[in-house]
Image (cartoon, rainbow, N blue to C red; front, side, top):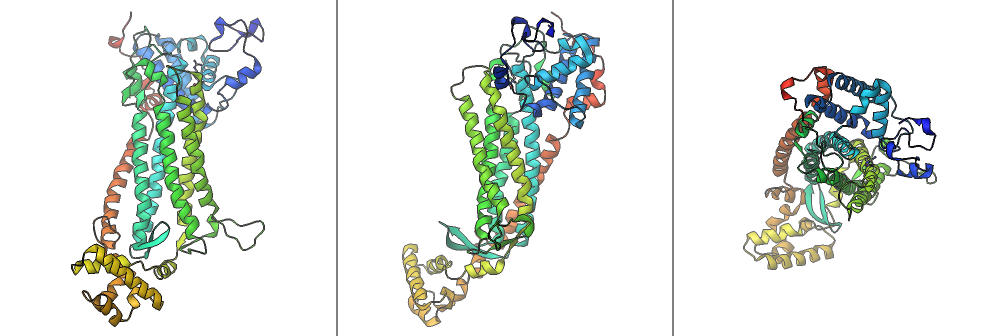
Length: 503
Ligand code: ARG
């Protein structure tokens, strides 16, 4: 079908034959995804190469056509990846652009590539490849941030500050312990990124529009060429399933929610009210009106990004809710929100590192905050418990001591020995030194506790996890088998005829 039959004919479409007229211009613009699906181009090109190779190996297309298709796709792929070829035109989506570009380059052989394939499995396979690629990139960026957090923790094993509940001073902790509390949430995110990478690891290519194909295809071969560990168990499920999209946006949303909690802390800690940290000029911004201001803007934007990514997740869930089997054009709408979630997560991880590096902790301010809040009152109760006083009674007695200290305007450890001796005869004044926060925190050496010895153990456990994750990133990243076969030109070698199946 050519454009000869007039501009309104559905010329140049992948589906023109049945139509006497092309779509209305507004309808066409509204239903087109080309404005936002171009990031799929390299991934679709890889999947198309795998599909072409599989068709060739199965004897579904002939040597000359197959070779022309693979060379054409490979060259387009390289030109797109290098930026030499812009993915542009008035095509309705990236898949149409690829087929048109291939046809322009190699001629009629291109018309055989879509055998045993539909845009429904085509778009799904490209999206899964993109997701898997981007998840590995995110894991790598997250690992770098975790490495930075680990380094700051290793420097601050002995720095003591109040730990908070209800944003009220609770008990002393070490700064390293506090920083690692954030890091462990991010370790959970890292694990989640890997789980989603696996969810996305089921290859849908070969499902066709929804009902497979009568051609003797080998979906497992296509899957292997694309580095997928599995292929689809059901052709309808393959084109309808978007769990990998939902799980990706969830993983990004939770990652950003975790980062937003840390970002909020940066905002609080750099306020005059806390003063636990100062920001380097490079990671702060000023006010257009108030000359004295130094605002923690990167932390605020980071905190704000989490809301938008939660929105992306909700968009995905809503797109799927009540959607009938199998493919529906609603699914085209998943891309913008998915790319937004991935881009936001990448951006957040990228700025979190310089932000952390620009954060200068103020141990003196932290030490000052250990005063005035009676943060070792629980330690006094625990000292009484060691002298066999039941905890409930000890709690009450420690409360009385706090009241007395408050009345005198002193810290617990500054009470006159005779006063402590009178209030707590079971333990006497010897307890006073134990109530100094820097000493008390080191007594909190229960497993997973804030004492420096326990935090050092955390660091060891942490290192094992990071090393293992780094090995995963190395193995999961890198070029796909199909790209290697193209680079080595093995992709163009005639398949051994023994494998060929004809019907
Ligand atoms: N652009 C479409 C998408 O992103 C590709 C699949 C179109 N399939 C179809 N039958 N219209 O989902």
